[in-house]
Amino acid sequence: MTATMFGTFFLLTLYFQGVLHFTPVIAGFAFLPFPVMLGFMSTRMPGLVHRYGFKRFMIIGPLVVAAGILWLSQLHSGSSYWLGVLPAIIVMPLGIGMTMMPTIAAATSGVPGHEAGIASGLISTSQQMGGALGLSILSGAAATVMANSIHLGAVEASVRGYHAAFLIAAVFILLACLSAILVIRSPKHPAPEHAAALKPQLQSSVGH
Image 1 (spheres, rainbow, N blue to C red):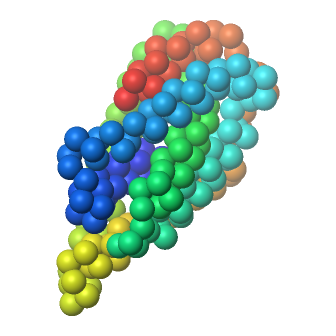
Image 2: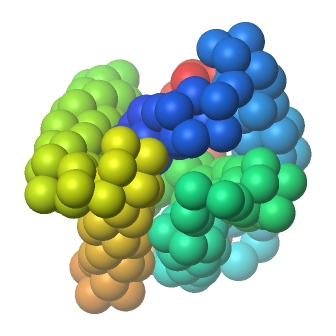
């Protein structure tokens, strides 16, 4: 999940400035719906996880993100922000918010209380490693396709590169969904002591 999002943010920033010709400030404001929707969904997840368990959200959430990524893969040089990008920026954070807290719950489920800090540290480390790897892979794929399509012109070559990277990002997300289906085993209701241990890490994830 983190591998996909870091790379997607980077490529969308390039698309905003290189294709839509947004200034850096306007490009920043273009992402504003993302944290709003992420905060909306994240604050509702603890109650939903307590009621329904975490596995189903670790399956549904990535599928929602994948839908947003696939929407972005349809961008072209004439796309507008309002119809080409905004729907994905609204949908993706709903899926991320639906996934992150349940992922933390799954990662800390069964961990003794005195090791909760270590588990949280490993979660943060894995997120940072995933982000770094995802950014490298997606930007590398985009750059390779751009270089091979430069005969089409700079803008069209860039868009082709973004298409390739977004499709790879969608594969990452589907692998996350498949992992949740095959690997995760969860009780319907997380243990209360684990729920208490999740709060600091959940707040940190929402802040990031």
